[in-house]
Length: 234
Image (tube, rainbow, N blue to C red; front, side):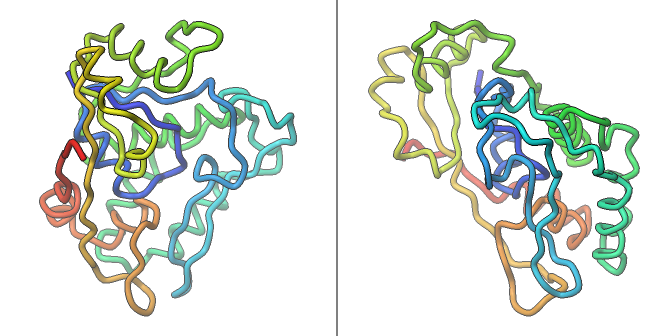
């Protein structure tokens, strides 16, 4: 069984969904510390022919607050963001696919950030036909001084995982020997990002999955972009 462990991100980039497709279970780090100016509560789209951020504003809290304790700002209106996305991609080739996601009754809850991230992720996975199970690190009990690697190995052990898969950006974080001694194979997702027509000058990779979905036919999305990765040990 293949296991992935990732921070929850706000409509993350395509590589995140390569990882989700590659594993059997994706464990979201809901009880890890929130990181400011990360992709947890924001991402990038193209609006009016330029790259802009879409953000979920948050209530002020301690820097040590866990992701699943972060509260969405009271003045945030999900309809405003939905309308911004509608207006930004209304002429895109797969506008109706975007509407499929944005019109979901699970698009946003009212208060908790993690709930918003988990539900929007599940809605997107469902649209993309990815059946990967979603779990949370808060469902596991870790020793008080456990490192990130220790937690991952414990999760793999608890779930019967024989392989841990990470994004290529994590290659410097882990030693394959640590995993092999625990009888767990360490693999990485190597993504290829094919160009597609965007509503701006040139091409910008790494934007939110929102841009990929809206700007490609469903067939290209599923048969080309969603399959443009391979698993490697290096």
